[in-house]
Each structure stands twice: as C-alpha cells, then as structure tokens.
Amino acid sequence: MYGSLAVSGWDISTTDGMNEMGLVANMLWLVESEYPPFDKGGHTIGMAISLWAQYVLDNFATVAEAVESLKQESFAVISDFIPGTDKFTTVHLSISDATGDNAILEYIQGKLIIHHDPSYVVMTNDPTYEQQLAIAKYWDNVPGKTFLPGSVSAPDRFVRASFFIHAIPQTDNTRVAVAGVFSVIRNVSVPYGFEIEGFPNLSTTRWRAVADQKNLVYYFETALTPNTFWVDLKKFDLSETGSVMKLDLSNNKTYAGEASQEFSNAKPFKFIGL
Image (cartoon, rainbow, N blue to C red):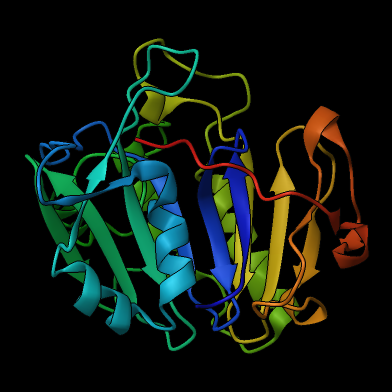
C-alpha cells in the first residue's frame, strides 16, 4: 500500500494524483466508454469508478505492475451519473511512472483495452486511443512547424500536444522542463467558459497539473486562480501511520510556491459507491 497525493473531484472521487513511488494516474472524459455489465448479486467484484485512479495509486509502484494486475480483470469498474446532474460518468485512465513507462486504459463495448508503451505520452478525451494513434500517424506526415490543427476538439488538441511535447527542450533542468510541459498543456487547454451542451469532452479546462515523478513534486494550477503552486511529497508522512491531510481549494483559495505547509489535518472524503 502506497501513500499518495490525490486531486479530488467534488470530494467523492480521485481524478488525478501521484504516489510516493512516482506513479501518476490521470482520468479524462471519454464519451465512447462503455463499462461491463454488473450484477450486485453475482460473483464478480465491482469497483466504483470514483475509486479507479486511487486504486492504482494505492497498489502499484510501476506501470508494468499495474498493467499486469489490471489485465486480469479481477473486478468490474462500475459507473454512474455525477450526483445532481444528468451526466453519466465515462472516462479513461492514463498511468505513468518514474521510468518513463506509460499505459492508457479504456473500457470499450464492455471490454478493458490496455495500450501499454513508453511512447504513449499524450492522451486527450476522444476518440478512443486506438483512433487517436491513427490520427497522430496521419499528422506525422504534416510538418508541425508549418501547420497544426487549431480547434478545441480533442483530436486537434491531441495532434498539437503530440507535436509540441517533443518540440520543447528535452532537458534535465527541472525548472525548464516543468515550464515546457505546462506551456504544452496550456496550448491544448479548452478556454475557460467554453462548452457545448451535451459534449462534456469539449468543456472548460478547470485545472492543470504537472508531476515531477523523479523528485516527487506535484505542480498544480486552477483556471480561476492567477498562479501555480506545487507540493513536495517528501515533506509528508505517507506511511500507513501518517495523517490524512487536505489543501482546500474551495472559494478560489490561492496559494503560491511550495504549499505543503498549507495542508491541514482532515477526515478522509467518502468515495461515492455502487
């Protein structure tokens, strides 16, 4: 069991995070997701989708370990509507580790599909990852310095991110690397306030995160605050005897610099269940 820093959505789920071994999990909307049927009275164990990312952070140190376990499908991921809305939760999950390994996990037509390769460094919302890779292959023949698609659609954002993430300086200078990755994420973000009813994959980018997996530092910014802050996981007791702590981001609270001292003891939030 590993300790982690997690980003919670509505205090009912984990959407992003990094554990003490440098394993990172991120969920994004994928309209095409279709989860397996589940019978509460049956023999298959069910796991609420709110727990999916946190389960990975809690149990694995590397992508290879996670893939080997998850492909056994010892449980079924079960989804539901976001409380108080008519939006049924349909997401896919990306995981990466400190060695540079990556995997994308999707449920398509009720089956778990795992794309596992260190070269899979970009994921946006839709379409399915197999189709995203096909789109990227097409755009490989178009010089990115000459032309890139510029809309807010997920395929266009995938193409731009795929080009820029390799075009920025590939450096071991942490400050430059973090700035470069943030600049790519901002380039492919959906402008604040923009959304199309019925297309949750085209809604506002509300937060951005960059994980320094080797130094265990997590950088974060929300769309409604004017600056970026970061958290050094090494400053926390992430053992089983450590305390649950929370950094409150409600009401547009603003933090600057390394913010570990701003965390306070808190009760664990309750994951929304089956």
